[in-house]
Length: 207
Image (cartoon, rainbow, N blue to C red; front, top):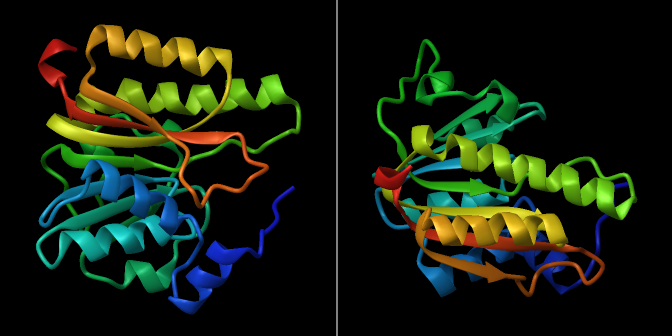
């Protein structure tokens, strides 16, 4: 069941004309860990409704690009921005950079940053939801060698649980990123079991 928590962050987002309160999660992450810079090319996985894309646009200035995918219908207002390329597509349909190409758009090189606010449809069954969330995270990590440049950064959402803890321990041991951080942003709902993993400086050469 989806619902809106009409708290400080909900009203702040509405007042500042952002598409969702989740923008403040990415803002806090970026302020702490310096993920997005001017001129970056960004992949926003599960972008809908688009607040993370809005934030990314504010940081890349007029030289960067945001590519977003989601299974929801395309946000046409966002898509009208020349620095935004949106596709109605599942992560299961992505295997290479070429999967973002259309007749009007061509992507030739890996991204500087990958953002993933993807979440599974929750069942309310804790273990099932944890496993579904981890499966999405694992899909993102499988795509890193193809989609993320050497030295690039990653922000990915995950649900709390033993499985994710073990998975990220493995990634730390493998040195997939030079740095790996964990954060539960202030804008996260009190009832939520989500947190974010921040990978800095991808070590593509090792994988």
